[in-house]
Amino acid sequence: MKDFFSIIGGMGTIATESYVRMLNHRVKISRDQDYLNYLLVNDAQIPDRTTYIKDHTKSNFFFALREDILQQAQLKPDFMVMPCNTAHYFYDDLAKLTDIPFLNMMRIAVHHFVDEYPQEQRIGVIATEGSIYDHLYVDEIEKVKRTVELGGPEIQPLVTRLIYTNIKEKGIVDAELYHHILRTMHDQYGCKVILLGCTELSLAQEKAPDHPYHVIDPQSILADVAIELEQQIRAGQNPKEVVQKYLYQ
Image (cartoon, rainbow, N blue to C red; front, side):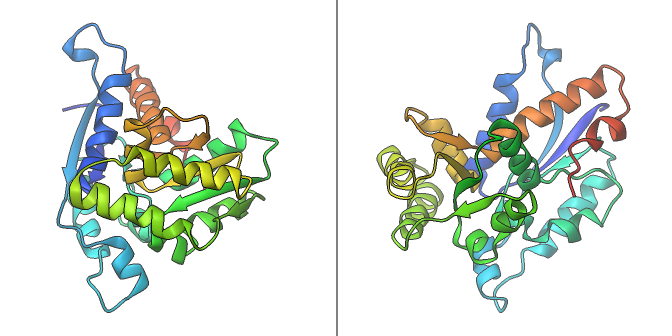
């Protein structure tokens, strides 16, 4: 297969399914051959990211990701993507494993926020406890001279319930809970824009988009970027050149 990219997924599986659905349904097609070429690694056995980030005595998810990336690198995709925000805890170490371009979903999303909302100096962030604990998005947002609002102590338990109890454990999206979280971040903490720092939250946005709030959805943005890049590569452009503009440091 030529002109393809690799998806390092399975964190969790139905969130990855949502990412693939975005890829497939956003491409304009009139025949089978118009769809993108990609390889999906749905590694459902990768240890929980938040559990390790908060307690290093627990199973380290780096090694499973390392194996997945090295396996895919042998196939020489045009680039790789990893639709899991919290797994970007090891992004720099993983990117060093191969010379295949490895897109950073978090950095792409943060730069999209700056481009889309240039007047906004502050953004709300909801994410896994692991991402919040290690300041993953806080650090990236501060690099672009913006500030972060995480909300009060009542926010994280609600977000964790939506991600883990509802989506990961039951496979359902509690739309009412999702909208309540967004409304609280907007009304009580003044967040005009809210970043969805977990792909389960991206799934919630896909399934329950009927709300009035402005969100930055990294998984959705990553889908659009992958489509743009792969279509340019298919049209004959050099893979390393077209990917370069999204390799933010």
